Length: 178
Image 1: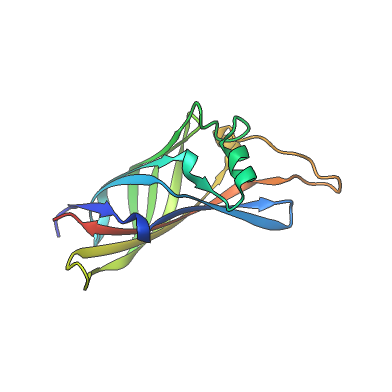
Image 2: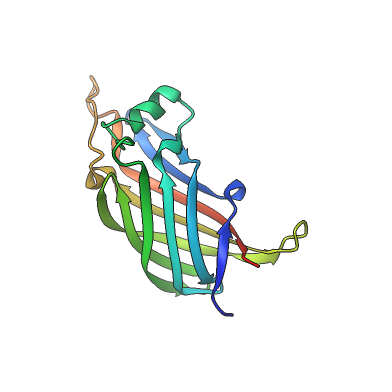
């Protein structure tokens, strides 16, 4: 199959993160507003062109005070760095529908290579619209300090409020452009 342009369905897609909180639990959040450019053959992603632009201000952890702190200069510094980007630079096929997708992740003006473990979940004809849709799932882990997200506070009993490692989860449903 030839490469096609795919449009991200924001209702059925998500960009989530998980980070250790208070050394005993995990805080989770999403970026609600993002755009992606995907030109690919979903049956063979090895030559796909993929780029994401994320509106950092759209962060949502279900706690307004925390979201505002994350938007501040202590973390994402949204005033000076309103967007995060991820541009794919290399894709390696690991098995039939399983890939290592490496790209340049830019957060707060710092760019580092990050590899997502991505699975092509399949494609089908949408019975409601008649359009072809495809699904992808991916995970990666980053150290937030590598991107200048260094704020923390010590706990009285030892340890820190925010863990360094952040797990990224991506769920994408895309519609083939007519």
